[in-house]
Amino acid sequence: MSDNRIDADDPYGLHLEGPSAATLAFVNPYRHIGELNEQELFKLRRHPFDVAQAILTQYAVTGVEELFKTPGEVERLKWVGIYPQRQGGDAFMMRIKVPGGVLSAAQTREIGLATEAYGAGPVDHPMFGNRYADITTRQAIQLHWLHMSDVPRIWERFARVGLTSIQACGDCARNVTSCPVSGIDPHEIVDGLKVARDVSDFFTGNRTYANLPRKFKIAICGCSQNCARTEINDIGLWPARHNDTPGFNVLVGGGLSDGERLASDIDLFVDESQAVELCRAIAQTFGELGNREHRGLARMRYLVQELGPDAFRAEVVSRLNFEPRSGAQSLSTGYRRDHVGVHPQRQEGLNYVGCVVPVGRLSGRDLVEAARLAETYGDGTVRLGVDQNFILSGVATARVDALLNEELIQRFSPNAGPFTRGVVACTGNEFCRYAITETKERAVKLARRLDERLAEISPSGALMNTPLRIHLSGCSASCAQPQIADVGLRGAVHKGEHSMEEAYDVGLGGALGPEAGFINWVEGAVPSRSLENSIARVALAYDSERIGDETFTAWSRRVALVELRTIVNGRGS
Image (tube, rainbow, N blue to C red; front, side, top):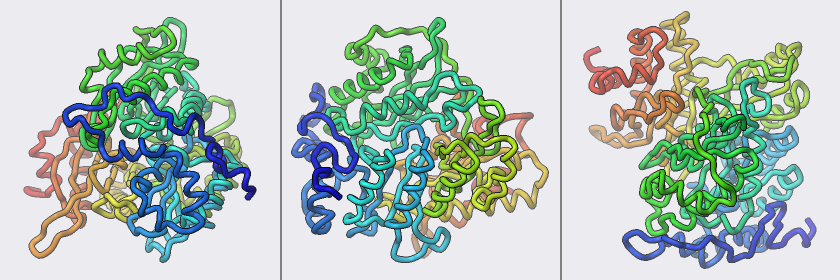
């Protein structure tokens, strides 16, 4: 590694831009206290991007002891995509940004090789083994068990193939999501992937917009089926037409965690060329007017709620460098939750194959093999979905059967059962310092057992072809997005007669799109040992009580809450 590559603006491909002290003006940061919170002070004392240089010249060389002693330094790690694991010491997670969810085969292979070379845990996991990575609900990839001394080498290898971890975390624009089949979807209206990459390029490494009050999530969907889940993002762009011009209508202020909110349509239309400036102006509005006193109230959705959508729109428009348009026709008509299976592309004779990766976890060798299959059978890309699955595209019709017979595709089958197909889980207390419960292993076991039970009870029933989506989150932070699941599970603790045990709050009926609405929390702290029976009863009740083609969401909203609680708990059955 040559010394001239280790500099403040280009530490191994991170491409940092702007003066080191750059930040947006704090026009109205206070609400009640009149003081900045501790994290805001850390960011002002030293720009978070500066931690990259400290890693390269100090922490990766002499060890992490000084890192943990330096006030605010662990917080600054987020800006370069790194978190300490709950195990403490020299064990870190790295999140890799994948704008729009589309990787080249070379990028996929490099992530797999890095997982194998640097991601070995101290012992094998009983279900997942060792050296594994996780696909996230924001189309990123997370590596585990990294040592700080290996980070410079990982960054250098990633830079060679155009990958970065910069701003995968932190109070800044996170990975920009999009429809994973952008560019190949027969029903696509606007090329969301191109716009997502342009927006990502603007924010990534941009010091001026890297100190926002809190994390800043953007989804850009060019298809009519809302694959990127725009309504739960700080900025959501979904397809619209103004006169004869295709583009996007703008939604703002969505989010989950505590204080969840569906994004508001602010009657603002942008074409593809205006999307970057629109996102910049919204980021400026958030940076200047957002709450910097109280971290729990600092997300942009609180600012939108505080000002009201119309006043927020006016603030954004005042910061735009173009004349806004309104009154566009929305072209978002549905809500497609996954791309599992074999589907024809817009390119004649080609198909994409959506593969089920339960809870998004796969080994480094699996990623290397996925890269090989993408080059051998497809167009050389691996596409990641917000459902934690992957897609291989550009597969000629004559070669689909051969691809389906490959061992990796047999394991991550496009024909998975309805529960395995829809299961999503966050990292859980295996690695996360905030999680109350274990998630990944439990979710996989739960989904597989429910599939087995359903096949035994109703092998030819309609439910076998109706994915029921279980989202399992280890705490209230909602990284697994339980509020928009058919069955949402949120980590809790059950106080038994003699001991405490892991448990989950159970909710039913979340959705986006035409049925948009958050989950109804039906019962609290259901012991984890009871989940299988509880969810089985819910699924069978839906199957027997639904009217015609009634969706699970519609059924769960039609049935009285007290009755749903009885089904979950099994009383009276």
